[in-house]
Structures are given as C-alpha cells and as structure tokens.
Image (cartoon, rainbow over all chains, first blue to last red):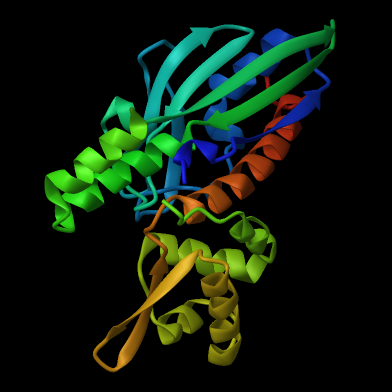
Length: 155
Length: 106
C-alpha cells in the first residue's frame, strides 16, 4: 500500500475582515487565537509563535520556559499566502529532517473589501510516515533491507 | 504501511475521549492514572480506551501487572486524527479573533 494515499487535512473559513488584517491576525497574532490545549511539549502552553519571515521558526514555549519546534516557515507572501512545515511525527516528536516534513499551506483570498476566504491545507502527511518507518526499520533490526525496501517503494 | 486507517478520524469528537487521547499524547498511562486525572470512573475510562484501541489510535502493552496505554506509534493515524480536530478548532478560533473588534490591528 502506498503511503502517498494519505489524504490532506484542512478547512476553509470566511472572515469579515480585509485580507491584510486576516493575514496579520493569522501570523503576527498567532499566539492569541491558537487553542492553548493543542501543544506538543510536556509543559502547559505559555505561547505559540510563528516568526514572520521565510525560514523563520514555528514553535511553542511552555510555562516552564521550554521550547518545542513545530516546523519552519517555507513561504512568506503577505497578505495572500503562507506555507509552513509541520514536523511533529506519529511519535509526537520533532523530526528535524526537511525530507520528512509535512506542509501546511494557507491562502488568503479577498472576496471583497471587507471579506476574506482563508483556505488551509495540511498535506504530505505521508512524509511523516516515511521518516518514521525509516527510523523504525533501523531501530527494529530491519537494517538496510528495510531501508532498501522503502527506497524501492519510493522510487 | 497498512497502518493508516481512516476509521480513527471521527473518534475524537467525544470530549472525554479526546481528553484521554491528549493525556496519552503527553505520556503513556494506565487506566488508573487516567482516571485520577479525569472526572470519570475507571470503567468509563476503560470503555473509551477500548473504542480508541479498536479505532487504531491507541495501543496497550503489559508492564508487570498493569496495562499501559499509549498512542499507536505505527503510521500517523493517531496524529492525523488529532490534527483533524486541531485544524477544525483552530480555524474557528482564528475566525473569532480576526473579527474581534477588541483586537487592534497587529
């Protein structure tokens, strides 16, 4: 079975504000609306931060000061488009390898002067699986056979 | 992989089940440990765990005399189910904040 069949997630909302404000609230004010119960670190969430530039970090800071990366900013195109990676895998851990990163694309489209449609797509979840399978293959004693098998599947 | 199952997606709609799932995301736990942190009985915890297990989101392992539950580490079924909830709630929260006149333009 091909893991590339994992369907993307996401959703669409329409907000009654201009596209510039929608983009700024989504990014600059990320920490004000992100639901605090959704975090990865052991500590309760103090702050969720999206750095406003391509290459920036996307991460959480716990109440104990610990930081936990979620991903990186890949595309920073205000006020219409934002692409960030999501690198938390099924083990609930940050995988620093960009090849194993899933991607979240957010598009902001002006429907009029005071209304914006925001579409969010979280895709390439299969990359998270492949990264995990590779590691499992190594730690599980599968060794190179497992890796080659994965390579063959991917090729 | 054969480990990806769409069946898990709807299972986190129940708030108690979601609470159990999120506790397990932070730390593998026994039924007793979960019951201590939730306002429900052990049998109720067990019942929710069975549903999560049948849906492929959690797995159980015997450690000595107790059974320890954790998120299913195979594939991303559990992560995907969790993210599905995340995006749903996050977009709703974003919409509210964007339209909140109290929030000055950032």
